[in-house]
Length: 177
Image (cartoon, rainbow, N blue to C red; front, side, top):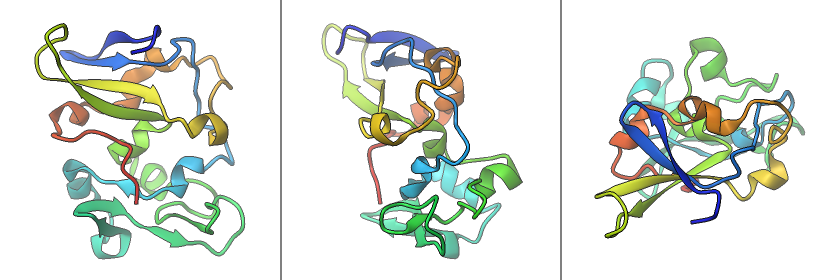
């Protein structure tokens, strides 16, 4: 753990080990869709919720036994990854159709630009597994929203980390399509 690591109660009774500078700020900015260039991992509750608003056979794919929102080639040069693809739900205007039209997004999308890992407890830690939160290494290069506002991430962890993460066997987020 780094010198910045600390245990924070994110939701009542749900704690995380935060391993990033507590002064870190983040706010989504227009034109930055870096987080939408990746295949979005769908935890089971997300998959079931997505079934209420989209055609799963069109919008999702499986990779190594896990469900993802599929990436698709886009007919534009901006708001896409280096391969010209982005999230199925990323519209031409740079907005997420799920978030804009249904006021919902998968847990994995809420977590960006953070990364969740799980460390097994040892004799000096609490029993069981701890959720550890850090900033994705790539975010420092690609995410335009880091450091542009006064919104400290540590003060708004409940917005980044849905409660479902504590109910999952594998809440790790560094799994990509």
